[in-house]
Image (tube, rainbow, N blue to C red):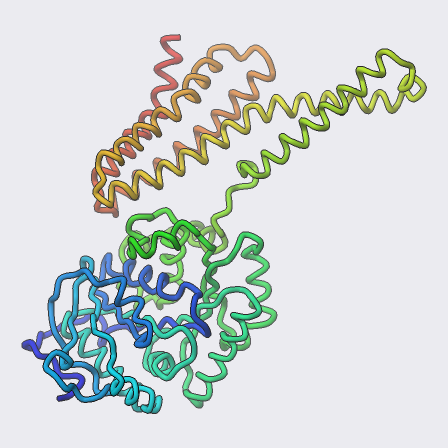
Length: 482
């Protein structure tokens, strides 16, 4: 029986494009987060376009293990690059709808005969057979976009998928060991395609905080760009440990963590990868990302702005406290002895530095709580969205109430200080709080606008609007009644 034959009645499909757009996701070695990115790309595309996600790692079947739950919509004959079926159960594979507009081919462990035939099939023949099988499966469920999660490392199925894919993402970590596998994959695929030009793009994944985006862009341009036909580096994904731990429980991370760097950078990746004609497959909020937002997301690695980095602030507080204590002890001893009196300039500098440290301490007394407020507020927002989309309604409402209470002290302080601004210190604190509130209000206003215009989460958008009104209006109301 042909590997491209569909058991169910054929469907007349009208695509926006002549044929489904195909994306192969490969890597030079395993463990670089390739499957997580494949699922993220497929889920983002399925928000607008019917998408087929295929597990081509026939040895490990990690993706198949993750996406076991779903609604069976079709069956399709197993591909002909595998051994002929010995039993009726071996003859067909299932196509599951694992999320709205997202389909996945589910298949059992390959038999020894399957493995022998698969490993003995040369790349050209495997390309033909794999292409026919996947396009038939896409036509069966009317998909216009195909994501192929390939084996971790160079093997014939990865090369075959790259040969017929419209686009290929080569995933790598920025370390010496992974680079060796990445360059080895590029050399082998060049030998496989001969003179045929393929769109292979490099993506850095699991980037640790020690690296900056500018360093990686410069490194790629200097050492790797020539290997990729002078194409720019496509994307840089930071390591988000909490997502790595969550992936096994909740594969569709971009749906429940829409503010994560994984979700935001996946959207920019698709915008940069697809041509203007192909971008019609993208959801509207992705297509309409402002240019400055795209550039910021492209360069950002999720690090907290240094002025609100709690680690840096804690270091400054400790250093400032030590300097303050030493200067205080020095000046106190100078008052009872004539040690510093012999060096008037040194005493003058010590008193001046003591004054600066004292003023810095007052500033830090405001800066650190505000930084805590921003960090905790973002954490509550992430957990609120996750709980709501996981249908944990009571937990989500509790987190929303906690975020309102979290901002209440800052609102009271802002309202109180606005009534009396007699001293320069009070004026500084008032201006600082107004600037923080202004930035937060502007950010929330943009989220509310885009939420109501593009997202299909009305309750989330209403609650976010309530929070926006709360932090905007409550300070004015309290100021009026104080």
